[in-house]
Image (cartoon, rainbow, N blue to C red; front, side):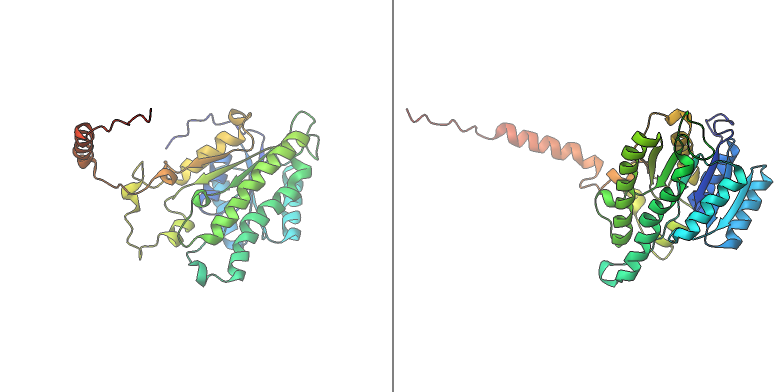
Length: 297
């Protein structure tokens, strides 16, 4: 689909995107680049990184990849510093690196729980912490006119509860809390806007291949308000909105982009039966004798 945004809304901006070489992260990298930004990608798999960078460069997008693990503070420091040295500034940090897999709570080891927490929540904070001096107003490579922007990719799993996702639900709840607290502190002290996006099920992503493999016969779409999976493009457009001047007064918010799925639940009655049941209940209610309370006087 054609973007509804002007092609230069991120002109001159530099974005560092963790998990930016695949899935939702790569679509965000691509759309940021198509709208004027230079992009640095961070990931653990060098081959995937270089392939993604080649694609971006073929689109005339200034791009570079840095191998690193968000769980490792030394990697985070090195990648942030390398991005600054290469482009001369950092305006946007997107934390899209994540870990996930289906597992029941009793089969999930504490180490497995810790791994997802370390990637999603601790990794998000680590990247924010290391990028602060380049994002804050008057920081390295920045003028005193304004700070940069942080965007954390979250989820809706923890809004209620999700089967076989206790590790990710806990991790994303922490990400949302981190978003709000940094928005308060760093928005006040450093003029940095910090927001999040909570995607729903997005087609053609590594996450969906793990969480909804072909082996699982699911009728989940029957209760989805828009009756379809989202696209990576949908998340990238929301990201563009939040990091551009269009979202300049949005801070501390996590935007849900899931077609209303988190609100959905199975129908208790078919639509055709609702009127019949409603009329029967109303008729019974009208015909029921009305008890008159007796006075004690």
